[in-house]
Length: 172
Image (cartoon, rainbow, N blue to C red; front, side, top):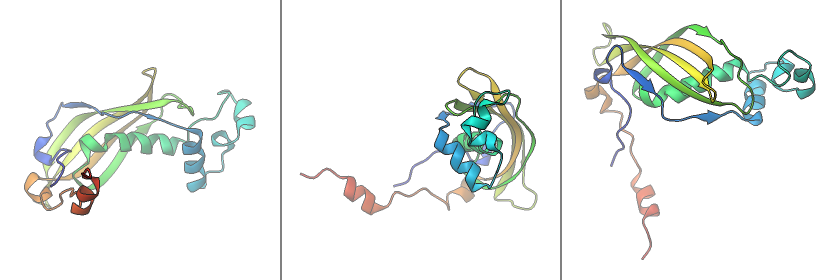
């Protein structure tokens, strides 16, 4: 048994718009952990006293976390069947994101082409943006992804282990 979701190269068309299905509220712990993991020492991301004295009046979400979260929200539609990400360009942060904000994302397919070096895959380019709960655009970027063609992607199914199915079966 396998679960089928995500798009293969053949499923993308220039001009298609995806409103990614999940939203994610960013917590204080998310922001502090990401800031510490990346060794970012700017107190605007973890010191309420310091952040309160800035023009923002409170902690800002680490910009690296903002980009990573929008990227993650887009995976189910854009890169679930990716071979690899090829790059991000034109990253912009036009509106601040704060702890407690909920982030949503959407992507527009801007280009597709077969890969010249990997016939089992194609290259998909998208413009992605992240919006907060009020609709303010907080993150934008262009992304290029190498995506499996359907025939090649079949070699990488998402299996559900038989044991998990047995364990989940109701006991009579």
